Length: 292
Image (cartoon, rainbow, N blue to C red; front, side, top):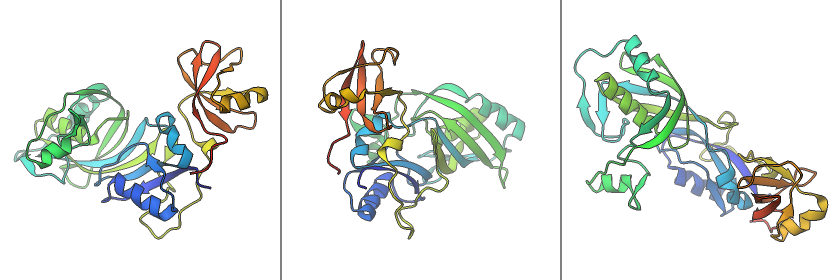
């Protein structure tokens, strides 16, 4: 099978791009992509799409993302994690556990977050990390994110706190650690991070392409969890849909303007269509295409 998807467990060190390059070599397939970047110091789940499945990236689960990790209080760095140069160190007594938990609770909900100065966010078509590497760091404007859960527990040292978080796509845990430290007046930086889940998918049991373990079989495109509803295409209309022609919708279906996954009676994913009044207009046609 040359079309499908994989749950991949990226280790600490490689970039997400490195992981994709490695997977291409391991699978012997060029058409490979992923649905969400992980920083090199972070490990955990990447949803990797292969062959025709790469056309479904925008419809695959991107949120909520779940993480476990550790942060350090009393330190602020240029990258908001321990890979950066120290900007300030707190010499006094660190806040107690009640103060830390109370401050952390203020970050649960809808927030305006400033991304780290060293990140893949683009300003004026240029990645922030490129400007930072050239000695001209740029502060990005704040953007809307959502923190659904951020539970902190004391770590092995007074400065260290372990956490579990569930956040929207685009939320930086490095920025959460930084902003918590600033709220407490002592500074903060991310110590370590692991992505444990994306939507219904979990990191447990995922494949590490940098290990000696053989590549697992691809999961079928038909079983890729999607964030849009299904629409059953009548057997008499399948050929028309696969030719790019709009087909009638069932009497009850998603509202106009929405996207839907077109499936046949056996559950085969035919493609993605846009709802237009009482018709489904193909946007992405999958069934019948040659493999990658």
